[in-house]
Image (cartoon, rainbow, N blue to C red; front, side):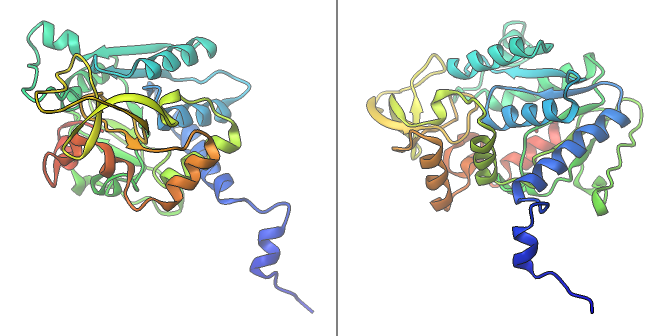
Length: 311
C-alpha cells in the first residue's frame, strides 16, 4: 500500500526547507550561476540592509573561499555616516575590494548639476553607468526586490542592459525553472537581483536568524528631524530644513536607507529585531512607498530612471 505524506507531515520533516531556507538556496544558486557565466561581476554595496544581506549570501555561496567579486558603491555625498561606517568596517573585515563612484566628483567637474530640490539620488545614474563601463563589469548585483516598487516588480532576476546601460522591458527573458540566460553582446551587461523574490519581512526575519549586523539607524532612536511632504527628514548640508520647517526631536527609525535628502524616517518604538519584525508585519505600506521622496516625483519615477540606467 502506498501512502502520501500530508502537507503537515512534509512541513514537520527535519529535511523540509523553511521559506527562508528556500529563499537563501535560490540566492546562493544565483550567485554561483553568475560566477560561472560572467567574467567581471560586481556587487552594489552601500551598507544598507539589503546590500548587507546580499553580501552575507555571497559569503555563504563561496565559503570557505573568498567572494570572487568586487564591491561598488555610488556615493551621493549625502549618505548617513552610520551606514558608511558599517560599509567600511564590513569591507575591511572580509578583505574585499570596494570601488566608490562619487556624485560630488561629477558635480565638481561639471559633468552633473546640483538639483534645485537638493535630491542626489536621481544623479546616481551617470556615475553608476560610467563606473560599470570603465571597469568593464559584465554582471552587476543589486539588492532590489519585487515587493518594493511596481517598476522593480516587472524585472527578471537577470535583467539585460544595452551598451548605454538602458533597460527595455520588451527585452525581458523568460526564467522558467530557475534557468537564467546571461547571454549579452559586447558592451552590454546584466543586472542581477538575488533578492527579487524576498519581501521586506523576509529580509528582517533572515537578519534575525543569521544575526547580521546592521547600522543603528534601522532601529528606533532619538533624532532631530523636520517634516516635508509627509516625511520626517534629517537636517543636513543638502538643504534642509527650509523656513517654516521646524526641527523636532522624535523617536524614529529608517526602513530603507539612501540619500539623506530623500529618505524619510518613520515614528517607531522598535528598538529590537523582534519589535521591528512585528512592526513590519503590521505595515500596509512598502518601505519605498512610505519613505522615499525620489519615488514620488511622478507615477513612473522609478521606471523612468531604470530605463536610463538606474537600479
